[in-house]
Image (cartoon, rainbow, N blue to C red; front, top):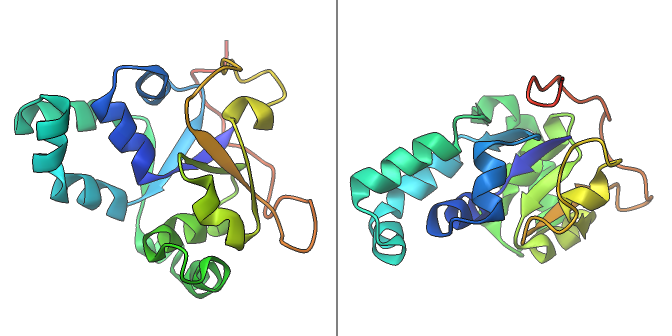
Amino acid sequence: MRLVVDTNILFAGILRDGTTRGLLIDSPLGLLAPERMLAEIRRNADAIAERSGLSIDGVELLLALLTEDIEVVPRETFEEQLPEAKRRIGDQDPGDVPFLALAIAQPCEGIWTQNAQDFENGGIESGRPSALSSGSSGIDSRAPESTVAKLADPASSEPVGSRTTRSNPKTSH
């Protein structure tokens, strides 16, 4: 399963030692994110350190660990999809536009987010990662505490883009 990771998932992984952190560190998922996600985390490092009880260096170390398996995608890769993503999201949350544009541009199953409602106007269904898997991904059906927004064409129930996923060595046994 290949998913775009929303910034709030990374925040959750830094703030709490739970399922989200576990999936980010030892993920059976193919994860990708726009490069702006790392800049956003770093801009908020002081607040994250205060909330988590970590030092700034600790936040940076944990950030490096949590993003080790995330493919960070430059804006140029999905830039052509930004107008369509903005049209779909409207005024909901302009910060989500790059995540939706990336999900439209890259073959993936959806967007892993704690705020699936932010993508509803973009024609996206919500569900847990386990709801999007066929049971072969190894994802615990109770996890994570966040949701995955599944890309769908607003006019149909069919997902947008290719269903082809990249090979993930962690799931190839």
